[in-house]
Image 1: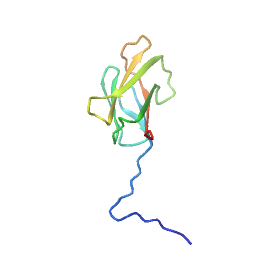
Image 2: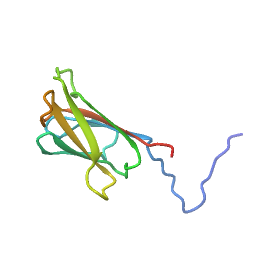
Image 3: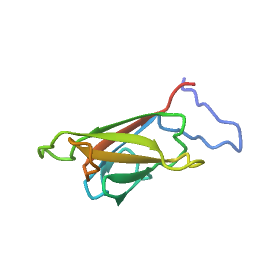
Image 4: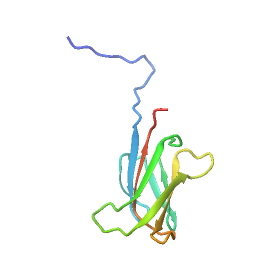
Length: 116
């Protein structure tokens, strides 16, 4: 005998992802992403905005330099922070060359929902 679970009337079933990931090209365009709702934009030399479809201010964020293809990449670094005070769905990613100067670099960004 099969059993069907029913939700209370008026409640739509919503599933929220436990993570988002995105690969951003050097020009700020999105190479690929776990959600079509992720928007990316380069705003200046080595400065990128990544906007998610929901608030991620209490999530864990991880960024790593790297291209979307097999092209060689030089050493450098990247940082993340919330874009502006009160903005909870957008991260500012800054990328740097090996000397520490702002530089346009491709990167991979991963954000994960935390349990608490």
